[in-house]
Length: 86
Image: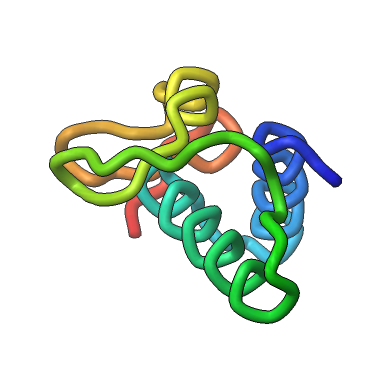
């Protein structure tokens, strides 16, 4: 079982290799859907971190704080250190 941080690294790596931007909001939604899909299909969680209901949607706190630099109020995503507007 991967941790939510490890899964986040995999998602960011895969997205980056395909030229897709990932902001924290997008990352949180992807993690939420992966967890839900895995629970529905196997009955077990993909990762053990809890998902919290925040103002803008589901959030895994440890991932949010690890990657909070990827989110800006203007919804601008950052693409490996360089600005990338989606």
